[in-house]
Length: 280
Image 1 (cartoon, rainbow, N blue to C red):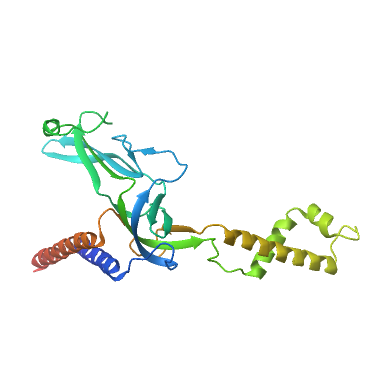
Image 2: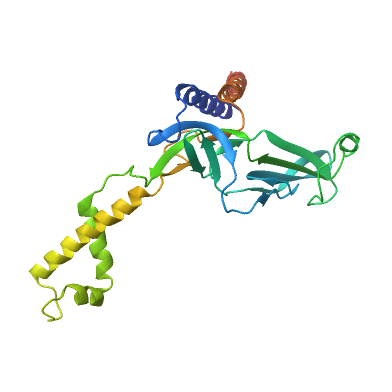
């Protein structure tokens, strides 16, 4: 109890500090690295709609859990028998641009959450509502489904990276070497282009022409890449930093983590008191 409460206290309080200390960035001007973003969720272009597995409602992200009520003599409890979580990228948009988010490994806190029960391992149709929901108690299975929908607000904090769009400078020597290595994979074609005396090998002067042509090719590739729109991505940080996606605002999210930290502190102190009483 002491160790679990201490871990909960420290981890949740660390998240509070990261959330409150990190300024919100605009997607177009965000620095590379650990950032905080806020915007609206939008559909991915040219990607078919996704349906949640239990309710079959269209959404952008889902997570579900199926529990079974098991009784063994005097003891009974709900046991998780099946669970899952979607991994399709999310598209976050603000007034300056959009960013693809890889949700794998994120602490996702959606506003849409439904829980109901039934007698089948996999539910059929929509969850009951109103009077039918009240009459649906004491069933064998319990279902929980959480979802993120298009046109909902999203708060995100994680590792931000931008590719193309002129954001990356050209390391000519490295790029030139990469082009030469690619050309060497088709050595016959390389000889056909640069072996002027047709002796079946490339002398020093011919290798100089190869390097010159490879440098020009590398510069042209960089120019074409810089002309393409920038692609922004947010993913789980490599370090042990919070990766959070939430439908709730920053203040509400920080308040929730404060309560978790307080509960962890109480559990830690209670565990320490129990341990001390056992040792005395």
